[in-house]
Length: 293
Figure (cartoon, one colour):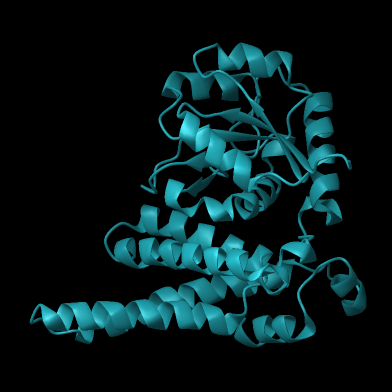
């Protein structure tokens, strides 16, 4: 069996949630190592800092002072937080939030978590700082491990074509599209009322769309279908629906973020053919991104 892409420390309280996460991460790419949240996670992670590449958290399972202690010791890892998307930061500003009804996106969320972690420089010191427990050697080792997983020095994306939407089985493809619709619904619901929550939903959607190579037409289709559903429901309730046109801004926002990810997906000096070999975006996707930039 090949070495797992990521070894993940799992701090989940609910057994059913832990089982579901394990099912979505099975297949050899990931090694999920359960840790008991009731034990001292700071001590455990400090003793095993060489063992883990990322962390899976259940929202609310650790107190704020525990997260502060982890940061003070330099125990920052790429993180996916399972729970309601509320715009709240649990661990650090590169964490990815995923509701429990959207776990089909879990593996893509870890791609996103590693990408965000490296881009924001947390493996190299980051804006949150590192305490004396994590010296430059420790930070270099973590950054090097993660860069090796992601490729291109960690700032350019290396996608896995086997997990592209078009290469999934029919059932997996349907599950992923249904889950993305739920994420986009969360984005629309909070877009004008709660920017922080909307931003978390937007980032979750965009990263999964990018790493699954979701066609641009599918993104537009998800948007239009949801707007049509809202239009019908609001009309049944006897209200006007003119305001729904304003939600085109959400679609433009998503497209802008996707274009930026495609722009970053290939190093400036890399030939286009190499990008395709490495799992980069197709030529048409790059052209679309550049046209929209």
